[in-house]
Structures are given as C-alpha cells and as structure tokens.
Image 1: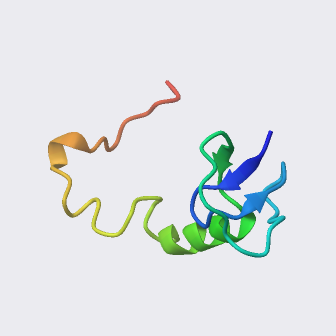
Image 2: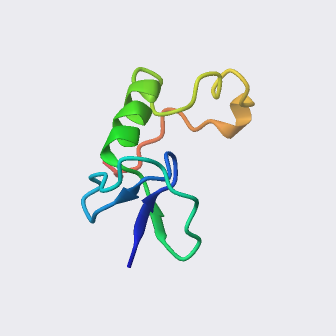
Length: 74
C-alpha cells in the first residue's frame, strides 16, 4: 500500500519518513497520514495551547468545555 502525507503530499514509509523529494499529486488510493516533518511542525504550532488551535478556547462557549471533572473515578 502506498502511503502519502496528507499535509505536504510527499510519499512516506511506514514510520513517517519521507521517501519522495517533492510533493506528488494526491493519490486517492493511498493511505494518508502525516510525515515526521509535518508532525513536528504541527507539534510546534500547538505547543503551549493545550493541544487546541489558537483561538479555539476563546471562541468556544463555556458550556461546551469540561473542567474539574475526575475521569479516573478516584
């Protein structure tokens, strides 16, 4: 099965390493994931935002947010 990064459209191997130097047209039959380079860019973008895109919490009604809940049952 061919794997392709959904962000940069480069071909990738099973561990997310790029195997093509340049982006290729989207292969609809391919399995799409994220290459290691795009993964690091994404992690840097969300670092310090609790995993939410910038402005997400500001634009989210407080009734949608869950706070102070113990999900472990302890």
